[in-house]
Length: 617
Image (cartoon, rainbow, N blue to C red; front, side):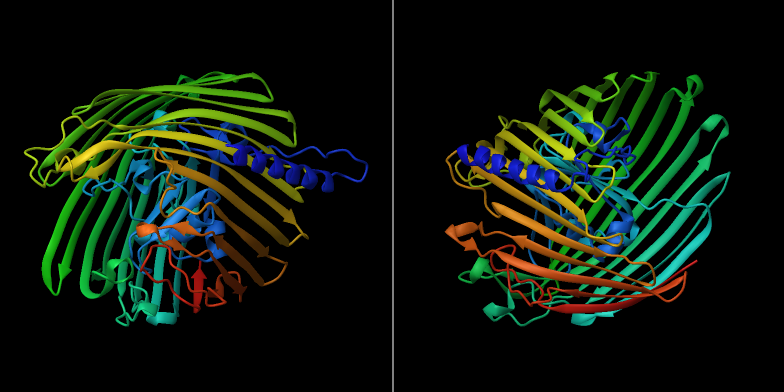
């Protein structure tokens, strides 16, 4: 605990020094612009400055600037987020927020929960999520069950797929590079007074590298093929009403390696194949009433995943998971200082022949007693057909004592109902699954400040957080199934700063320190205590632009008492506009050919490159 506050004090002093260096020559602060970035993941539309809790946004422009093909790589460059992937090119990729497990991260695609209902822990695999279809990613840190119900115990990653623009538009792109990799795609969209639509497709094919680390003698390449289709459409109705819908569909085939006793990480070359089909879709009706002050939204959504594994050409595993959601939310602007949102949800999950149903009621209130102060509170009650009722609450406050400075704080609760697998599986002599299994529960708090002067040359923020999670569900041979046996406490600091070196060069730095321990004092596995990144954006007038991203991941413990080494990796992305509609681009990943592992025994690509071209109209 002492280290937590000492580190916090040092970080605050560093920010104070940054603030002092960025004052205007006469010692005063210029007036800051109004924050206009709207956050939708908090249920009531707010700017980031009003939200009170940590929300980070990665938009399509940022995704294109850094050049990553998959969302997981972009999310990795977010303070407080840890990525674990068991092999590049289709290996299972998880996202952990502030030390919470990947199974405790809720993933939304256009507002629909997409976590895998058929997996043991109910997590989401980010390995197949292509950035070409993404408009923005919102990352909400800390317990968010009051907002989104079960699974949001550690945080939320909300994906919004690309929207159609005005008029007719479209594009084509293609790129190729190392490891026999090709990626290409096309899109077309149209928007007008009556409505809009967008259709897009991307294909990725690669020979890949060995999932098991090549340095351990694994020479067989594990390929990956992925096809993603997306569609989005809306119809504008009289009175400001609107119907909109979307679908994101992915079909992928990934080769992976086998269990090998005695090998590092117990993994080695083998003839294993995974075939996966994922679908996420929704249709929603928006109806404004009371002159637009009451916004009513009805949504029906469904997420499906079908997984099939093959060993030496024979079927070895299959599973199918489904989540079907119905939601109503009504948001009333009582007056400019008071907003009320109420709603109800019902979600049905299915895996194989088993089912579960969760029903929830929620209410949120935003109160602005004065222009600089925003208070937000909420309460939610969920009823699970197997595990009874859970009530969670949340509170957030944001105060701007000056236009350049925002002070914020929040507290929230989370819960995660046992998955279908956890509540039905038993073995090892047990006669039945553990009927005493309870939901996981968490509570977390954070305080922070953001400093954004009007000149926008220097910006900085710092966040201190603590989170406690109880009744974690683990497998136990003693009961022949799952039981609540673990607790985790985590605390940490996240610091971000940016500096506009000129009108077209910006330097951004992010750093996170996380200390997370189980109740017996052991640190959490596969979680670095220190991590950070340094991003240099270069976008001068003219045709050329580029970005350099330096990522650092500290040492982290893995299974068997092994500690994985810290690593640093540099990626370079560059673009050149030949005309308003045509550009070429290139990328070098892991420029210094750093060897590292994210999970014991699994390798990562060395130095690689790609070249591509994009045409838009």
